[in-house]
Image (cartoon, rainbow, N blue to C red):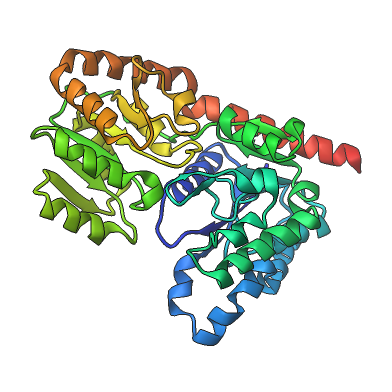
Length: 394
């Protein structure tokens, strides 16, 4: 099979980029031809003032992306296009390019961008579903786009126009949700549940289970408010002397680093590190912590941690409560509650036997649900059904 993969990379690399790379490599390994078309939001850093003023219009429709995708399809003749992200530079014009060349489209729903301008269902420190129930104009009221009226209006215009034109419903033949939680959010927003398949995140190799329990806790991910780093740092005031390692990057990195220093917290900020280093850190950790305040879809770090035979300590946010079984593959705490998080960390630090047992259960969960072979089977089934249905419709 020949697959065209499209992805607009973020300024700060995260789980989506890792998933795109893993799926592309898996497909190549299985003998499929992969055509990868990518843009990166890092390019925005070097834009002129004039180019930045034109950015909202490019977000709405990129003539460049439209022409390039049409040309690629004409030359390569792929069987299916698999789109991951089109914001901001690629734009939804690529859906029209695929349809104009009669290529079926599969869309992975990594976040909630189609139904929330912020993509997180999270605003001002709390879960927000106002746009789902009262319409996207609520995002204008709350200035959801980085507190900028202009940017909020630009993002709203993109989503609103393409919703009115039914771009995301007419020109996407199959959606991939990462969890049942995510699938339900889109169904509630009016998307056809029959077109939404659940395929969890995965890793394309087996790192093997760890041999012994480590002596530090670990956070891996983007450094941003919705990820609950403030809750994590507040909890660390109440966790004795256990070390916390934080791997990742983001705009708030220096702010959290200064907070940690001012409060003499035993925290080591590592910045952005390689995937190989991440696995080394996971295997040597006591537990991996996901303190998210927002509705998590399916963080890839969950599968990576399960694969290493390490338990998770996570908030009951979004799909996390669905994926992690409290007291069996990890511990769940109330989102935003630093006291509850500190209690779970202190318990894990005291009860090393429980950490070992939950880590073994996590490894079994990985073997049962998240191996390469299982994920490849689901992905190919989705591609096959999508292409066959598209051909049947003529």
